Image 1 (tube, rainbow, N blue to C red):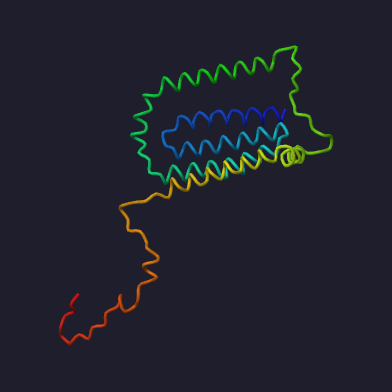
Image 2: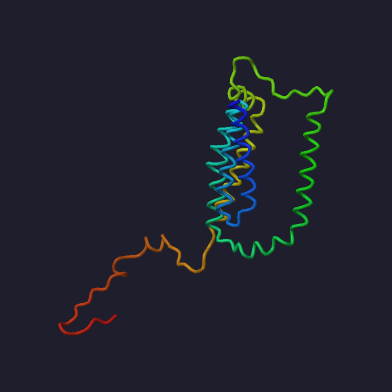
Length: 202
């Protein structure tokens, strides 16, 4: 009873958060709704016993990806009025893609529930071994090179985010550290013995 109530609670909040992520006009609000959806998805993973995926959603997606989206949205200074004006041109393409994805989901659910197929609904695990330990054994032995390749892809994404945010601005004066280090005191300070009662020439 408690598990069913928790499932429907987390699922309802996650669906509502996903709708608000798409429908929010402010991109910062969209990212905040996305974080709420990730937290509720982590709750659903805990209910089915996949604690590793739940912690992955909280640590990686909420702690890194969503915060990265938030800072990129706030730092890139995007003209959202112009961006919204161009969305109307892509409504037919977006609607077609949404219908295709909906048809694929319906087809997958029908294939999953059809009778006569030998489909296991849970991955086989060893008795007495947590799924985190079993996943770690498979990940660092059988799929080690794939795991390292995924790390390289994330490294490239991080470098790309740094390049996007670190752009040259023409409206500010940059700091030239080498020029400041080479500057001598006699070039920067001029000692003037000014007579009493006279002004200072600048």
